[in-house]
Image 1 (cartoon, helix red, strand yellow):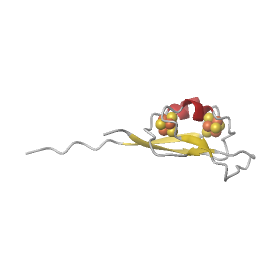
Image 2 (cartoon, protein in one colour):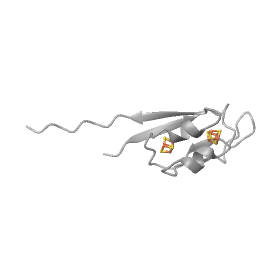
Image 3 (cartoon, rainbow, N blue to C red):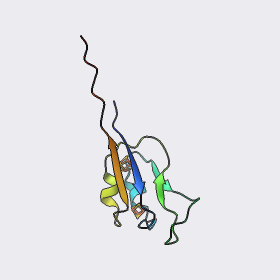
Length: 80
Ligand code: SF4
Ligand code: SF4
């Protein structure tokens, strides 16, 4: 079962530098053109399914704006 994750971007910190977008191996981050942050940027956001919770986006973000949540893989059912 593939790992599943999600991210939350802090609008108060994101400066739309797009580093997370360029470094996401799943290519599931984009800028949200429908929203403007208090600092006047279009913030990064998940744009598709497929985040694995790898954490790379959070590591490369210079503003530490991203929190990554990872779903624990379910244990395989034990057969009798
Ligand atoms: S945790 Fe990994 S897969 Fe998910 S958005 Fe960030 S870089 Fe992409
Ligand atoms: S790397 Fe951080 S500051 Fe840059 S666009 Fe992504 S969330 Fe925003």
